[in-house]
Amino acid sequence: MTAPRPRGAEGRGTLLRLMRGFRSDLLGALPERLYHAWMAEFRSPLIHSFFCNDPALLRIILQDRPADFPKSNRMREGLAPLLGNGVFISNGEDWARQRRIIDPAFEGGRVRESFAAILQAARAASDRLPAGRVDIEPHAAHAAADVIFRSLFSMPVEQGIAAQVFDAFRRHQEAQPLVNLAALLPLPRWMPRPHSRRTRATAGHIRGLIAEMVAERQRELDAGTAPDDLATKIMTTPDPQTGQRFTAPEMVDQVAVLFLAGHETSASVLAWALWLLAEHPEWQDRVAAEASLLSDDFASVSRLKATRAVFREALRLYPAVAMFAREAVTPQIFRDRAVPRGAQLVVSPWHLHRHQRLWDRPDEFDPARWDTPEGKTSARQAYLPFSAGPRACPGASLAMVEGVVMLAAITGAHRLRTTERRPEPVARLTIRAHDGIWLDLAPRS
Image (cartoon, rainbow, N blue to C red; front, side, top):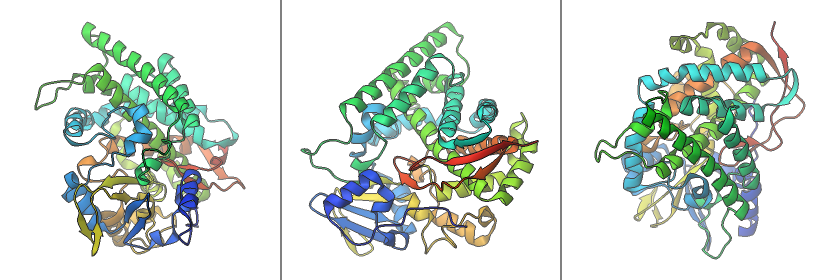
């Protein structure tokens, strides 16, 4: 059975129609040919972008010469009110310095040290789920936010200021859905920006709450009472080149990034993965059977092989980020086409993961593909759930463990069934459902 996706638009249409489509349904506004093309150029008086699906081009842009293709500065226009100059949107030496400080927090054994927090959040999420019909997206958001606060600040999301941040973030999403329009459309300066006064106000409120958390952690560090969690690790790690640590405002930027990247993205993939299991009961039964193998021992995660395959397949069909943009800082020649300086190079995991020339049965849910030679070859060429190269997500390993543990804990306790409401994916910053992802839940005996 195929996983749902919007049918791509055909024909050029008007620029106004395209921009309206981007606002309401970014995926459906793009042409169907992107699921087959190696590269596609979009050009008008306001737009000059290249969608790049050729694996050879992606290696050049993301891995071989990333300095020549920094993140589009236009991305800041949608995200800077919340993220400041955080690692997700910074460039150049600012970005490199931030990664030198952040990366050690996610290396090697740090994921193992965060496992207890992940498992506690997963069990709490499973316990919160009611029987009957539910929209699983809000529950997935709650679960993902809980992982972030337990891992970062050693507190559950329901506790004190963490609950305020979570509620404020929901209001921020209502004020401005996280559509990264500015990264794909080079809007002129006279055109209204993609964030409003209300968006700036809600972002400022979130940042104020995060500043309080950072200040409290600094007081704990000064008193020698701070827990050994990710926030402590990041705040106490000096840049190996300069010896300087993050200032308090810089730490606010990074916490905002980690909350957005670790909450919004993980919630999206988890919700779709649960729906895919409801749609495919044979795989749901395999995941439920594996759930008994999950224990307080971090090594138990490695035994959940079917669950991991399901989560990898969910990341393929519904990637954490639908698409992102790089900018050409010098003129290029790509596939015999001239790419001018300043052109937007759009990398779309959504299209790449469903590309008809790179995947067998690209729209079908088939976790078994990860054990086949064809699936492994496609994964090496065209699987970018966490980007690639030096700008790959530093928390990718933590996110994989979180996804596997959440699926096992929830599916082991609840039987999932689909409803007559088939979800319709739309792209914001992540892939969400147009009107929720509705499931019928029943407790397993």
